[in-house]
Length: 210
Image (cartoon, rainbow, N blue to C red; front, side, top):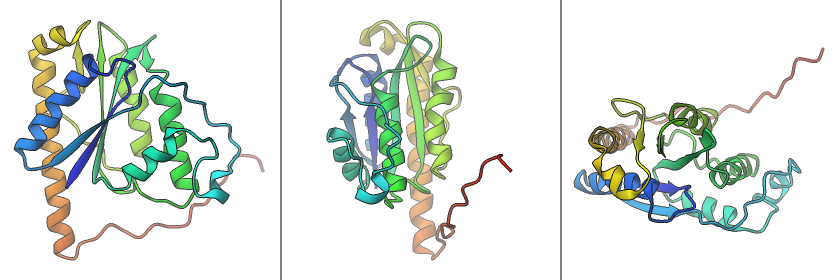
């Protein structure tokens, strides 16, 4: 069992990484493998709503989104990390995840369904709860159980050293990791006992125009 930790910050080793590293260390103690995936700072094109992914089985834009989807398929759980920029998740992580989740679904690659997910954010001061809600939507749309901590999954600080001083925030990262590990172990036991997720239904797309 292993969890993919997604660093959606432009700063590779900054506040978001510090929180994710705390999670990774705790997951290791729980016997769960993990890897931190850094999105990077290259420009990420937004989804063009071309729906070519339904025909190609992947996003038509040739950048690291398709590489990420291939990699993500190998993992059992996901934790998305982002800094707060202008009161919301970073301008790197949002278009990246929009295209990753949409192209995986439309391309017939149901790799996220029933796998647990969680979101964590870092901020100097405010915008955290909205950003967490914003990121959680990816899990809720993809039929993914959302794993919680004991509070909103956030840390505060202007740099990595300050984040380490946020004792409550860092404790919550460890609690989140323990809860993720517990859920994955429960899933494993259930699967071995023959208790499997429900079969997917064909999606009924409707609108409100009559």
